[in-house]
Amino acid sequence: MYHFRHPYSYREHPIFPQVQTHQFETSAKTCQVVMKDLDTLLQNIEHNQGFAYKIKDAAQKSNTSQIKTYINELGISTVPEVKYNPDGIQFIFTAKRTQIETCKLTLSIPW
Image (cartoon, rainbow, N blue to C red):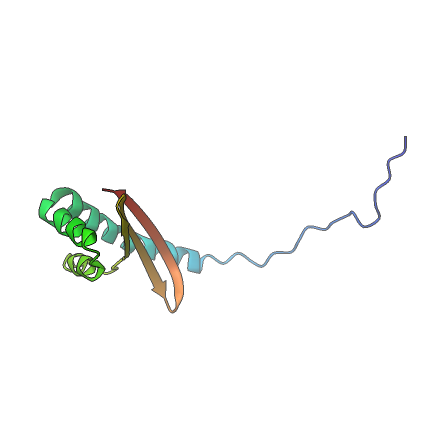
């Protein structure tokens, strides 16, 4: 039995550009700030029953702007997009730097 290789089956290794990590490092730094904001929000939901009540009450009334007002009052620098349904709430934290999304964290919490 003979084994022949197709004449065009030989592939050279692709040439990749030099690795640049500046954007990657900057994004990681930005994510740390966003994670602190997310932690502040979680701490208030967990330890401040009045805050948790206001968030859920506003969600049940479909009052997204009020939820954002409550979150703004926490003094965090990244105010998340908020989505909710009867099963829970979702906070989407997005950080941008010069129109480039550098970090996006999504937190889903069941009611």
